[in-house]
Image (tube, rainbow, N blue to C red; front, side):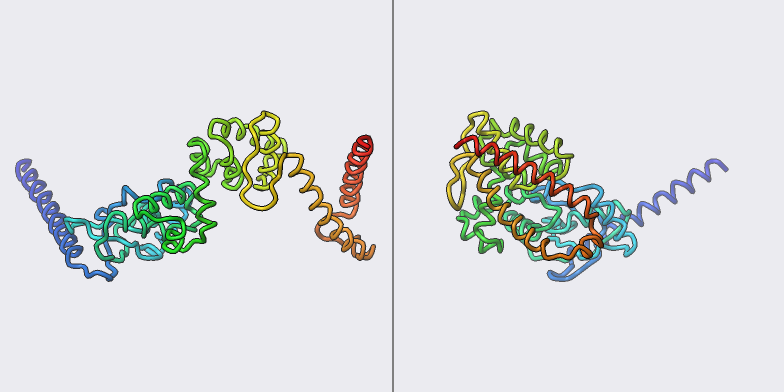
Amino acid sequence: MFFVKIIYLTSRKRLLLLKKSKKGVFMHKMIKEAEIGSIVKVPLTLIKPNPDQPRKFFDQLSIESLGQSCAKKDDVEQPILVVKCDDEKSVMIVDGERRWRAAKHAGIESVSCFIKPPMSSIDIFVTSAITNFGRENMSPIEEAFALKRIMDEKKMNQSELSALVGKHPAQISNILKYLKLDREIQAMVVTKKFDKGAALQLASYKKDDQVSLLKALKQEIAQRGGNKIHPNEASRFLRGEAEKRGLGHAPRGRGRELKSHADLTTRNISNNIKSMQKSLNEFEKLSVEAIKDLSGGHFLDIMQDLKGLCQKIENQIARLEKMD
C-alpha cells in the first residue's frame, strides 16, 4: 500500500512538471510568434527589466498604490513596452518597469505588453528616457545622467539633444546642473530626502563646500519650522552663508550681476516693498464690514501681523538713519 502511494505521488509530480513544461514551451512559442506592434499577455516570469534603464529608484509606496489598481483590473492600466530578447523566449522592458513591479506586488501572473521592433541598446535607453522625462516619479538627477549619456553616445550638442527629447535648450542646461552636485546630495534628491529646487542652488558652489553649506541650509529650514524653503530663499541664504565663509559668490546666469549677498538682499526687499504697496492699496479699498467677515483669517491676526511688520520697518529705518 505504501509502495503504491509513492508511485502515485511520483506519477502525479511528473504529470504536473510535464504540464508546466508544456505551458512554458507554449508561452515561449507565443512570444516568438508575436507580431511586432501587437499587444499580448505575457507571464511576469518571462518579462525582464532592463538593467541599463535610466530610472534606478522606485518609490515603494507608489508601487504598492499602483499595485492595488492592477489587482482590480487583473492587468496593467497601459501595456508595457517591450522588445523580444535574443532567444525570443522572453521579453525586455523598454518602458513600464514601475507597472511591472506593481503587477508583481499585486500577485498578477501575466500582463499586457506591446511588442516593439528590435532596437539597439542605446535606442532602448533613449526611448525609455524620453518616456520617463517629465514624469513626477523620475528625479532630476536620473534625468540629468540620462541626458548626459545620450549626448555622449549620440555625440550631440544641447541644441540637437533638445530636438530629440522635446525639451527647450534652457531646460536641458538647467537639468544638467544637477551633475555638479556632490554625490551625497544627489542621493538625497533621488530618494526625496531633500527638495530638488533648493538642492539645485548648491550646484553653483564647489563640491567640497556643498555638504557644509547644505548642513547650514537644513539648520535654517529647521529654524523656520521645517517647512519647505523656496529656491529663491535658499539662494539668498546660501549667498549670505558663502560670503561669511569667504567662499566667493555663486555665478549668476542671467540678468544684472549681483556683487554681494547684500546687493541681492536689498534688491529683494525693494521688490517686496513694491508688491506690499500694491497689496495695501487693495486692502485699503475694503470696507470695515468686509474685513470683519473674513473667512480666511481673523482681522485681529492681520492687525497683529501689520504691527509686527511696522516695528521691523521702523527698526531698519532707524538703523539706516544712523548711517547718514
